[in-house]
Length: 548
Image (tube, rainbow, N blue to C red; front, side, top):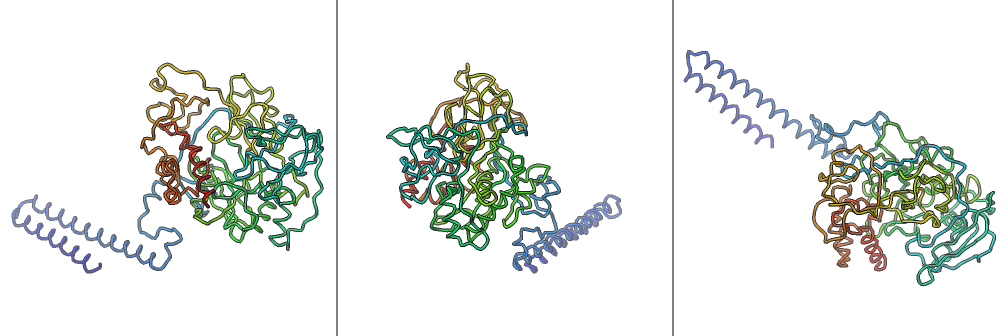
């Protein structure tokens, strides 16, 4: 390499000197000839030094790679990389922190964000545990209580027929007033009318320090805390017999109008840390904590200074707050891997088993949406009745109630209940009015990544959400929209097509094990074909789970 470079330098310089000599002979005695000579010599010198510096830089980079020093990700070049020149300006608290910066994604900014205040006066009077919230569980579990039974918070309600060691417990004390059923007599919900003052089931004392993993698993199963833990792939309940490779927790949510977990954690820091300690004993791998690196302020100390965990900051657009995206960029899920995931409030509930000695399923829920008189946070319990959380707060009745966010949440009525893992209620306008000429008319209230809408040129604009899809389902077309908003090394359109045709090998090869519905919800939002992307993915996941 050195010899070829030296020859190139010698050849270029020789050509320039020869050109200068020719110019001197052709223009002897003239001032213009001298200027040309000096110009060519200057160019020759500059080219010489440029080539020397480039060769030195290349040798330095090669040496750093061969020695392994470049494995840390540091730039050993004499020149800054394009990523360094055009990287977003990060706040001081992120300096020297492990960081992942992603470019793809899209933030949907909606009106109706919850004010950072907890309304202690709002409270639901009924709560439910819904078997339909759990993938792979028998739709008709074995009931352990009858209608009319009195229960305490933490008392068992039903158990899985296939795995009877897994039980679901009541989030509150009170009377079991209903066991609601759906198609084929599947149980849709077990409803408890709550007491004014919650009474708790007394739990046996348990010493976390020095216990074995088997003893800890048995304790979590007996207390009803096991359903708090989900497992990937397939987003099913965690396996009780096998330790996970790793455990992942995202401490921020980037979905539209999602609750601010830095606010939610306040006053519950001890329980959160204790929950992390418990999880650390359940895996031989690591407990990974994904932190928000987008804002100017550092995340809450309970997150940033958590002990016994591996911390990584993330900077980018939605869905960067999804734990699935974070897993993909830390340590992806491969065939045969099992990783567990929890939300922040599930970790708190887990920790309270040990800090309070009881099953305390308290939740801080964000009640959001522009159709509310006053979007705010409320203190309630897992599975609260939706109508109790929004009663008297609607600005009008022509609305849709959603458990969760607008992208991946489920439609509810006022008599329905929050899903098991949700800590957000979203209220949006029912979009059942057709507009003349539809999308042909310019609209400033239509969130879109398409430049056919003027709103796409105003990324900081907030929109008033409605449910109109602005089109009907049609054939798949290749637009690149899915890839534009999914910050993962996956070909989503090819994956969805392989699911529709039932090609198992392609589904596995294209990364289906890394995804659940919330990860592709943004793909469904930008889909010009109006395909039910989340339903398609779930069909593929269920098919792969049955084959495994």
